[in-house]
Every structure is written in structure tokens, then in C-alpha cells.
Length: 327
Length: 305
Image (cartoon, rainbow over all chains, first blue to last red; front, side, top):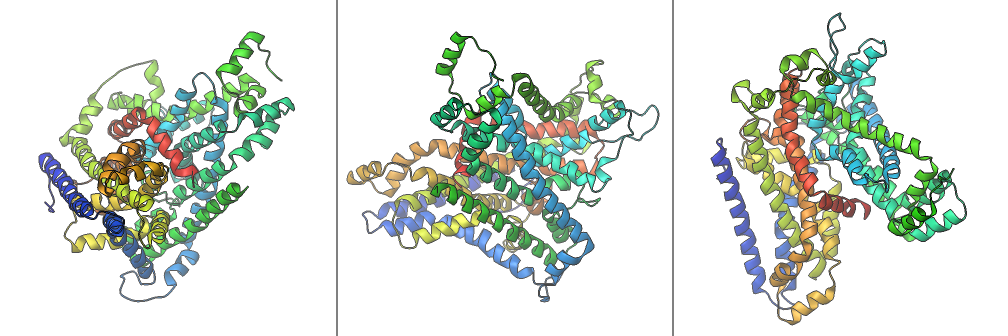
């Protein structure tokens, strides 16, 4: 039951066995919970209900997290304490500085552009006849994997040798050729390649921004809109003075959510360039250092840095939302 | 600036649809430009996928020598690419990985869903010492990036002799899902009117009965929303799969095989295109069928902050 399986029937059988085992555990918990009636038994029931989640989170999240923090102070092999050297490497090593620079590009550009496009599109298709269809088009990329999205975009950027009788099969290069230019090997051309990878993330996240912002726009009270309209507020004024302030909390949430997602982006970089040609970012570098270069210390430090960078974004988010609620 | 609308339709418009700031802004933005911009965005967002979809039905030679747009002047259709990605002889054998993805997904959705529902109920409706502190701690865990946990978790699995089995993926995905799941379901569960629960308690129902008879039916939309969310997340995951199932084909999900294919045979577009669409088919279907729940979950999850 806990051993590797290879054939399809075995796999399905193991899955069913796992589900049965889980059901049995749940059954035991509920059986004991059922025996404690009345208000005094409450605390026992509470702890019983929480027990599996707390055990899993302690073993699977809290302990590993603390251990990674500890490992970030160890050397590559994980057997000697080297203080803050791994962190020093991240902020001084030439390659690592490129990684940091790329991460800054990703985290600054993706949320802003994705949110901008999402907001513009939400406003443009609002209450049009094809609203739900139009939204589904933009939203669909959100449901597919980053890997599949990367394959889709790799094909868009595909390059064929620039020779007579060799035709371009990637859309971007073909458009360049049609316009009389020379085709480019986009993905190896730094720093342009990083921006082309960011396009993929924007393509995925714009749908998320659009959905949240569209709901926020529809929730603006009618009387405010009506009053502004009677005052003869123009379209730009309407957007600046009514729409934007009303949906501000939603905008903050969208920006920060996409920002955090972007910070952890790994699949796109790995699938499209493997982090080569100066395209690596922190999350990808973490993987390469830990599992490829066998430098666990540096890998752990990169993971911890990722964690540290998430915190101010969350802090900003919570503060902004609190402020708007207080108002 | 304003477009002239005949009076009759103007009045019906007012009744039929509520004007929003967006619609007003858009109307003043003079319609043709607004429509054109929307169409340009929609085309930009659809064209990349469409190009690869068309390619997946073209013969290998055609894909590699001409652009997919020439398909419309010279259409040749084939299912050969799809046959090839399911064929074990090409080395792709997607069928195997498709099964793996399903086997990974089902427990990884059901287990956290059940555990989170129980926990959310406990946090919302049972009084016990340390409740608020525990709740805060679990919610705070949402911000922990997966990367921080992977290496020590892998070591734990090695000690437990679980490497190379689905257990590593089931346990990891279930654990990682819990903080968000508990948070979302708690938001939903605490809105249930207390009178419902009081009434059930007066009738002598314990927490088990209340959970199953009162809460679970009310919770269905929230459970559906999170279930879809988690399903898409697990199906589309690459990082967790690479870390724990990178070694063997017998547990690797379809995303992993597609990523490997893209890395080792990056120019085999006949395989990559068909492979990509096989891997996309399930999440897109789930999404299109259950869009309503998914969007609701998204709104509940993010806007409440």
C-alpha cells in the first residue's frame, strides 16, 4: 500500500486504498467526537476536529519551514555553519545579482500591466452583448498550466534560420519578416528575453485581474453613478473620481495577489529557457541550486529570501484593506 | 460626446440594465474605439492558443516548414499527432501520465476539502481554549512559499520510505492546501445564522450531527468553489511534482512530461502541440462547466483580504 506501483489498475487500487484509509481516520475522529455531548465536551470535539489539520501543518509546513531557515546558514553540503555567507552570495555574486534584477522586473511589471489590461478590458466589455463570452476568452489562460502556457508562447516566439526558402513558423518572427525585418532568436537575447517571458505571465494573470475588478465595478452603488452623471461628469472624470476610488481595495488586492504569484514564478522560466541566457529568477534559481547544483545552503537561502519578500507585500495588502474598511 | 439614442430604447435600457461607471465611461469613450480596443485585446489573448491548436491538427512536415496561418489557404488535417503522443513507441506515452494526474488529483482535492471543512467548523462554532490563536497561526501560514518546505519535506519522505509513491504528492498537496481552504471555508461557515445551530442543539444534536445535517448542505457551493480551485492547482502544478516525482515515470503527472518534452525535444512541435492540448483539455473542461463556482471562489478568496 505504501510501495511504488507501475500499472494503471495498481495505481487506481492504491488511490482507492488511500481514500479508504482516510475515510477510516475520519470515521474514528467523528466516532469519538460523537461520544462527547454537551457544552463541556466541546473542547474535546474542537481539538479532535482540528487534530489532523494541525498534525499535517506542523509536520508538512512549520517544521520544514524552520528547518530550511536553519539550513540557509549552512554550507553547500549542509554540514558546516557559515553564518550569513549564503545571503552574502545572493547580494554580491554576479549571476545572483542578475537573478535579483530579473525578479525585480517580473514583480514590478507583471502586476501593473496585467491589472491595467484586466481593468481596461473589464470596463470595455461591461454590459456589452457578448460580455460573458468576451470574458471567458481572457479568462481561459488562467485555467491552464504554466507549462502549457509556456509551450503555447514558445511557439509564438519560435525562430527558424534566416535563409532563403526557410519560412518562419513563429507568429512574431513572421510578422517581423512581413514588415521587412530580420527574424530574431528572441529567447536567447538578454535582457529582451526576460520581458518576453513576463508577457506569458501577464497573459495568464490579466484574466484574474479582469474577473475581480469587473465584480468590483458592478458593485459600485447606482446612486453615486447617477449623481455624478447628473453633474455631467465626463468619462475620464467618471473613471478617475468615481470608478477608481470605489474599486481601490479590489485593485490593491489584485496587484498584491499577482505580485506574490509572480514572485514565486518558476514553471514559465524553467519551461521556456531553463533559466539560461540570463533569465533566471529567485524561484527558479532556488530549484537549480538545490536540485541541480546540489548547493542546499544557497538554495535554502533563496527560499527564505522568497519568504521574506512576500511579507512586505502582504503587509501592504492588509494595511490598505484595513484603511479602506475604516473609512 | 454622448451617442444619440432614440428615447424609447433609452427608457427600456434604464429598466433593463443598470448603468455602471464602466458602461458610462465606455459610452463616452465613443463606441468604435472602445469596441476596437476590446477586440484587439481579445484577439491578442486568443491567437497564441489558437495557433498551437491549429498546428496540433497539421501533419508534422507542414508544421515544421510553414506557419500555421497557411493552414487556411492549404488545409490538411490529421489526427496523427494525437495518436503519436498517446503511443508508447514515440516515448511520449501521455496516456500513462494522464492517469497519473488523475490519481494524484482526486485524493489531493478530497482530503484537504474534508479536513478543512471540519477545521473551519471547529473554528467557527466550537468554543475551546486557544481557538483564536490557533486560527490566526493557520491563516498566517498562507504566506509561506512552498519552496521553503520542499527539501526538508523530501528528507522526511525518504526517512518514511515513501519516495517514488503517490503518497508524497497526496500528502504534500493536501497539506499545502489547508491554510487557504480553512480560511475560505471559515469565511463562509461563520455566515451561517447561529439560530440554526442553536435550534439543532436544543433538539439534542451533537457537533457531529450538526456538521453533517446542518452545515454540509449549506456549504456545498463553497466546497465546490474550493474543490475546483484545488483541482486546477494540483493538475497544473509543476514544482511539487518535479521535487517529489521527478525521478520516475510511474508517478509523474502530465505537466511534468510536457515540460520534459519541451526541454528535450523542443522542436518536435507535432508532439508538443498535441501534448499541450491533451494536458489542457481537462482543466479547461472543468473550468467551462463550473465557471460560476470558480469565479465565486475567486471573489471570496481574494477580495475579503
